[in-house]
Image (cartoon, rainbow, N blue to C red):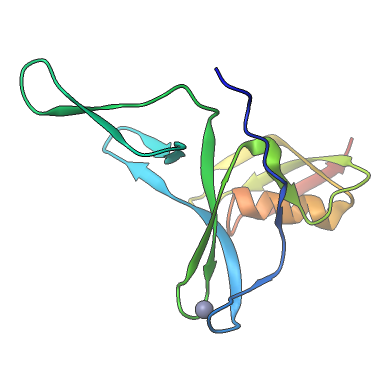
Length: 145
Ligand SMILES: [Zn+2]
């Protein structure tokens, strides 16, 4: 494999749409079938279609770092800004000194999830990250570790 592509960190924070100046929220692209939900991966380069053995073509995908697309979608006009990142490239709210918090939550669909660990420079930063992962969840308990 070639040298790992290193991105500058992408900061998840307040963003303003360059088209209409409304606020932008983070999001990602999902591939969904009846059985599985998957993140859409980013592959560097131009698609390499090769003839398949029997008929048609197949896509030859090179080894590459597993990057997903993190986007920011305008709440006004729907404009999307995309970044290809690994989980390590995502920086939340200027995390500096990291504290760890353990949450017990009720998700939007009503599931209770215990022992969800989030890091952040303070409780608010950890809650912000939690809400990115579980939108509209209700925090039942929270404890600093
Ligand atoms: Zn906009």
